[in-house]
Image (spheres, rainbow over the protein chains, first blue to last red):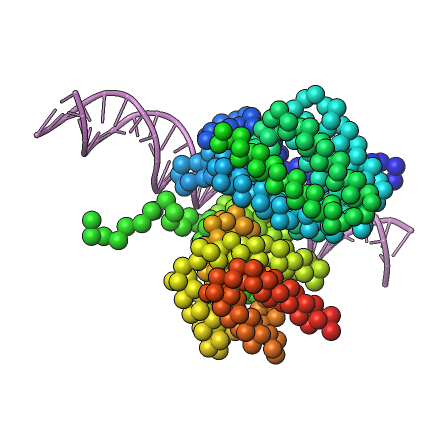
Length: 218
Length: 218
DNA sequence: CCGATGTATATTGTATCCAATATCAGATCA
DNA sequence: TGATCTGATATTGGATACAATATACATCGG
């Protein structure tokens, strides 16, 4: 077999295409908090019937990205400061443990990739990319943990606070500080100091939460 | 208004009815790991079309209770020992922190209800009720935490390991030990010793994980 | 007899249609 | 004038119908 084959059962169904597009739009902030998502409108936009749209909206609701009310439809669900803080605290609980378990099993390739993320993060002028790079950085470091359930929960949590994360990076010092802290975490991993990596990760996340709080409350 | 009114928009849609029923059936073990869930069959059983059934299955998939493949349908998804262990560890990370935050705000009524759960738990002869009572016990203690996101994640985690939890309680000493540990946790809460409550909770969960591992591998 | 291929059936994915409910503008009445 | 009722329209929930795909079985050639 010379042809480039792949598992077609994982190919995109209409539902997943719509879901991915809407998810991106919400996370990236193109669809804003409180905005109504009309099934008919979305269906026309994607040239499908309302059925896959409804299923996509259902998935978005399960992910907490929209809220729906019977016969009223779906609206993009923002987070209060309290709710966002709680999710940062959720991360602050999980991620230190995840990285602690990952450090002993981390390959040099993973470390190299994490460093590359740092570089790209520091160099990239486009704030729209920062969210992605930040996420790739953390995911890269966590992959070796062998804790897929934790990772899934974290990805979900990240989805919900991504707009806040971006806002926080846009602060005067947000970007520089994140960069500094990221490099500290990588170095702790490189020296196989799991406890230190965990503690730095915890401080990194709680610091982001505090800076968010200060920003919002003035 | 003398009539007993309630928010009808929260009334059960066909989708939620089917979802709740299937969720219960999976959690209670009536539907077993690997079993196929045929849309048509379920639709006939509930006397609805396949649309609400599909939406229920989608929700179950998001909760991790079934796995679906395009054009192949949904099967009840069991957990390997590894996966179950990881979820216990997830709980062991979250629940101590949740109870720590709940202790200072816990009302006497909540403590009384938790104690009542203990009593009912110890007295009830029907193992089918133990899972529910165990869950109500923990939920009661956590409610005052003011951490709804954590609670939601925990409820989801509990759903997935409920069959394992029941199996573990059925062990010779499982039930007695759980009862003892529960009472210890309540007393720590009653004396407002948050750190002790957290530590006991952690030990309680990790102990359950270990006993599960021994049972399965031994 | 064995494996490959074609065909029938079962099952899921999606489109279209109808019913139930919400929303909003105008009419009605104090 | 202003609040309430009433219908028209918009929108969602659910049912039915059709298309795409998988699965099981029969057929055929060797």
